[in-house]
Length: 176
Image 1: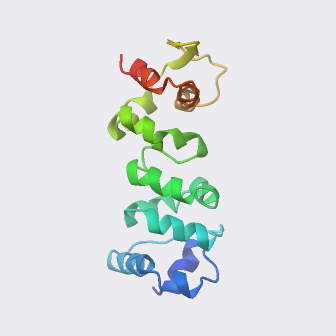
Image 2: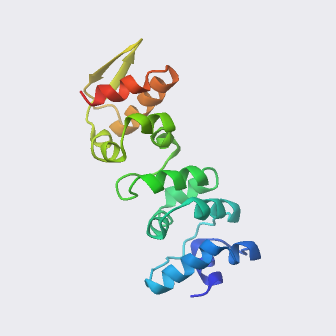
């Protein structure tokens, strides 16, 4: 496979010389050819600038290829390339999927109080909803009317707690 074929398969049409000669693109090409990586040509187009930010900030080509097969990530890439790279440098793409809602999970303050392992194994699987009432936190059982996954509702609660300066306390409530 050539650089042009690789980038075209990834959805980057008409790449510039700058991208074609980017050291990490050359590394990615070598990785794909050496590891016989399968690149599925998709219908979505990736903007070169966004891809360049992503490739410059992602740490693993295996992770990069995994997330580039995810339509949701591709659709967000134009708007959040650095956040996506940061998110997937930390979290396993097979356990968590990036969306704008999960940006709190890469927030510096959040990462002071919660580990990657706890987030992937405990927080995301929590079955109770965190509720904030003034300065206190309680859990309630989800209603059958709640269509959103519980972890997304809990992410919103964490964001609210952070806005109130109570993120540490909210995370601690999950650990009780």
